[in-house]
Image (cartoon, rainbow, N blue to C red; front, top):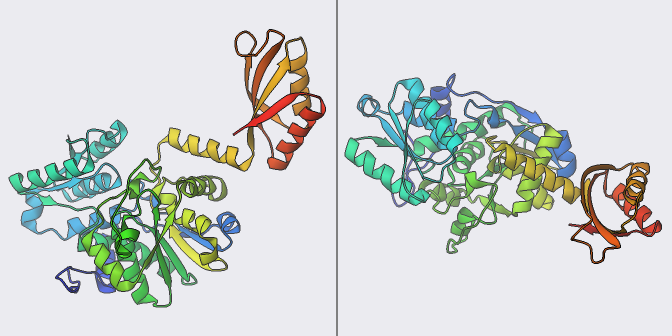
Length: 411
């Protein structure tokens, strides 16, 4: 493709490349809507517009880069087939668009990859090879197979064709919502941010463009700051949990002077919950990272008109339910109360009535009469209660204390 070259021989991407990519993928990838999210904006303290790339066929933005990169293959490369390494959205994107173009696709996934992701990737017609205990081992095996079988390796982010395809997201956002003055994009390997920053800033140099990483994996922020990369640990934002960022995205972001913000894990969970409740949108952890940046760095975005993508919606149902319940606890809308109560008839009914009279709803009861209490004359009771807000919750606790019950809140 026709990008220029940075010093050191690293290829880069310009607006012309992104426009060409948009032409190639038109009709193959959904032009997703960019919609206002006033409920999110009220919490974040700014105007918020969401680019809903979770609506893509595979549930994530990765289709943009995959569709463009596969369209750039020569006839010989298409006939030989392609190979990719991914445990997530890139796998499904390459598989889908390879099938669409009649190209044989092999996807190498680590052995720990959840079976649902394997099945989804295979459903798009790809051959899945499970190899290695880590992403690095799976990637090394993919490169070995590419060399052995003459396959073209489709990198998830360190490839100008991928970067230009991902940049079509910003092109659509700026064209569809010209009032935007700030853009925020999640960063894993850097392909999405690099392509979007290149396109957006050439279209409108006055735009502010930020990246966002989760605090356990701030690899791009560390690289840009000239610091050694130190990452690791569990995160709900596994889609951007990357140790080795792309050299092409890194060089492009450094030249453009893009700042990458770092957010705590809790902010990502808050972002997922806010999108679900406030915008009625399902987002995976990486897909909610942009909203997390608004919540974690409010001073940077106060009063601005911010566009950010929900770049993926592939979150496990159990993980989503856990995040929502944890947020209800943090907001004080669910309380866990522990009681030491006398072991006599009617006490449990009395407590339940007092909670009901105060407007609370008991949703779980744990009543230990035999073994947990300090004496045989008492018993332990733990209740999970749904309330309107923390003020109502405190009123319920006060009512219990006023009735001489020994109660404490469990965090």
